[in-house]
Amino acid sequence: MKVFLHYEDNTDSKLHKSLKITLPKKWLQGPTSKLLEFAIESYNASDLGKINPLTPSEMHLALKIAASSSSSPPNDTTSKNNNKDQDDKGIITPLASDATIINVMDDRDAVYILHGPSQTLEEIQAEKQKEINRKKEELAKTVQCVHFGCKNRWIKGTPPPKCCYHASPPVFHETAKFWSCCPQKKAYDWDEFQDIPGCQSGTCTDVKEENSSAKQFLGGCDLREAVGEAQKLKSIDDFNASMAAGGSSAAPILDRLRSVMAEIGVEKELFDQVLEGIKKEVDGVKDNGEGEGDELDLATRELGAKLKKAMKAIAVDQLRIK
Image (cartoon, rainbow, N blue to C red):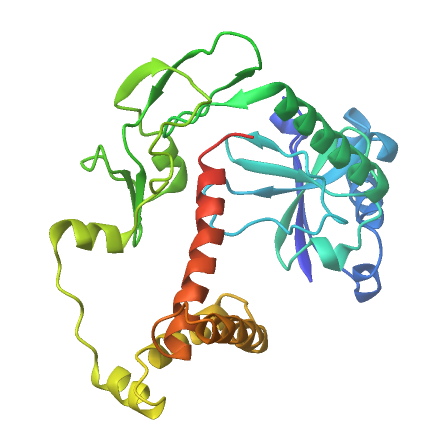
């Protein structure tokens, strides 16, 4: 494994230094502190070290992840500090001094040497928990505006602030994201979508309107219903699959869903287990005379409802600042 070490944490660019190193195999299972010691020893041995000597106990290592990068830094809570700083070039993620190198670094990673003492895994976890507790306390003291697109929170019992919000739910269709009240303003990036200004102004409220049971977001089906699009015709493959399943139109849908879920990390065995459990649930509904349609169709609709509910919860949560 090769990594690139950079010391740039100094206003004087003449004191900056970069180094490419191939890590010995025995280091890969060792702590990052080993790499930090080597990096500082190398720096101090150069002419720069005579002018600007570095002290290992006062330094730490970090990775810099491009802010626009689609990849995310490793989310192993035992290896990374959850307190991340962002500069104009990316997100700085400090590395725990006792984290294992192979777990927190990839080949050809850019590793930065920064001022400030390193933290251990235990210290990082304690800091993370402290931040979680702080946010919980803050949430307990405040209320959230229920207007679409408004992110305001305010202390309970105090006058609500002014807000700028949207009149109707957001639409997530394919890669496009927009508010149904402002269809001309589309975004394809989540941050850009969040920045679309509201079309209504008023005062925040934490009281939902009488029609609060209405959809919190819309999708492609809602758009097609709005324009009265005819139901999509079945393909030959779908027809053959449904015939093989006794005429059920749900069979090809479940086959495709099973494959897609596997591609995003949901094991096929887990999918099958959940589907079998739902089949047993709908069997009970049919026995009580409450369900209409065959078992597979009922199970498909129930699975869809459960997935939709879970994704709706995620989408609604993403629209709010906790």
